[in-house]
Length: 97
Image 1 (tube, one colour):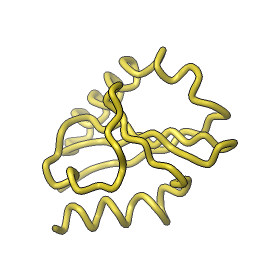
Image 2 (cartoon, helix red, strand yellow):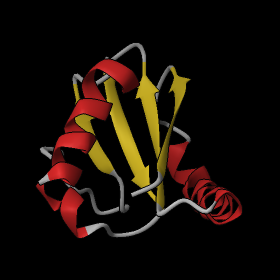
Image 3 (tube, rainbow, N blue to C red):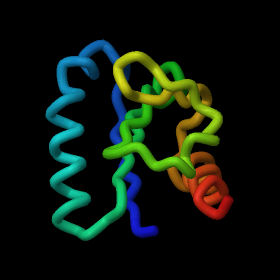
Image 4 (spheres, one colour):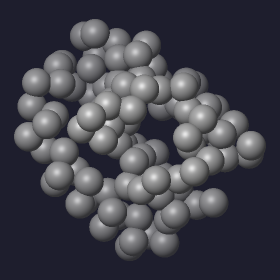
């Protein structure tokens, strides 16, 4: 499976809801232009040390991720601040089954 994971750092999630649709559209366009199966964006609140995850589409293998699904379509990744050390190993583990 081909995928991409990006990260953006913010000081709070106060305006995230205002940009969710634009972010989702941009992520889908990125996945399409690069021939990726999915793209994930990890928005990290560096003050509260937590992240929210946006994924371009439902991937059944990722249903086992240990992050609660929120009503706005994002995932709540509490205490996850490192894309490479904390998120990527969990995603790879889920994809490998």
